[in-house]
Length: 130
Image (cartoon, rainbow, N blue to C red):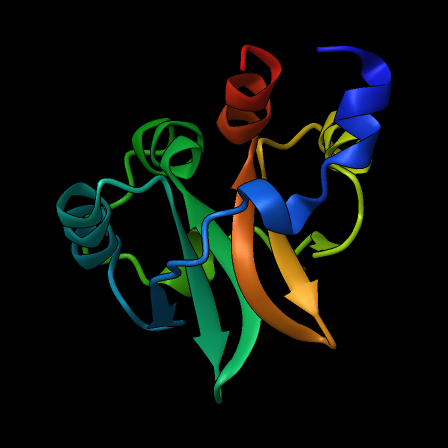
């Protein structure tokens, strides 16, 4: 795949539309179980129905395990916030650049200000080898 191809594919073409959300008081144990059952690596955290953060599988290693936090720790204490987003119609090249500059592996995808999906570094790599 050439770089031009990578620039012509839109985020909405490869993003995951299925999102699991929790509230800020949901415990890390509950989140871990949801991730395992859903086979996913990120959960959006909402407060008063507004997305305020994200908990990723990486947070379990870097925040919970490294700091020996209890399993009843609420999402609010470990979530990454504010959410770093990308518009659904931007190129996947732009998504890759944003992930690199922010040193993250997952971006929430927005359309008209609403979260409509998530795109991960794995999605980008998968697209590269097609």
